[in-house]
Length: 185
Image 1: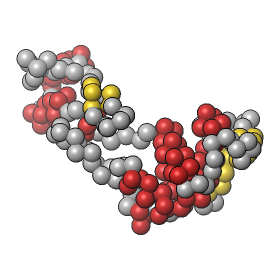
Image 2 (image 1 turned 90 degrees about the vertical axis):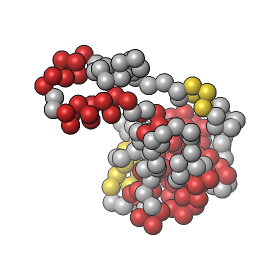
Image 3 (image 1 turned 45 degrees about the horizontal axis):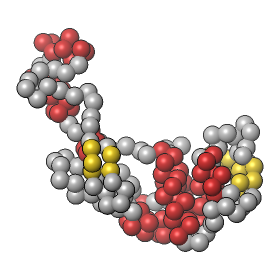
Image 4 (image 1 turned 120 degrees about the vertical axis):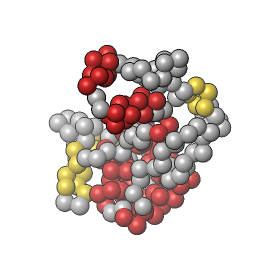
């Protein structure tokens, strides 16, 4: 998907594997073609529906570390941090949340002192978990709402999936940790 960052307009959208619009009921992969005759009608229907589904619109996914930008943006807006304050954070290789130690991806050789910019470049989990904790659940969810993550976009295409965020009242320290770095650690 390619979007205009100024207004959110979708400029291009593609999916794979695709299917032949002139033969929409024909299997589209070698594996499906090889097994097609052995499938019952229900399995054939499910396979066709999966083949036709626009995954960019109807599937949900976890954005991974790219979501750290949301945590960083909210933290900057709330003046919890600054972009280039040298040594503001110190990665020791892990952070403990609700009795569980969460490692930085580079726990074997921690990043040490770093600014927010460096933490973003390093994709340092402990820094963003700490920022999420400073923001707190309610403030974090205010930003999720402002960024539009808690509602459908309203794109003019059928089958748009909704958000995969828990309701705010169900979010505790572990869920906030996951949201801050977007990971099911």
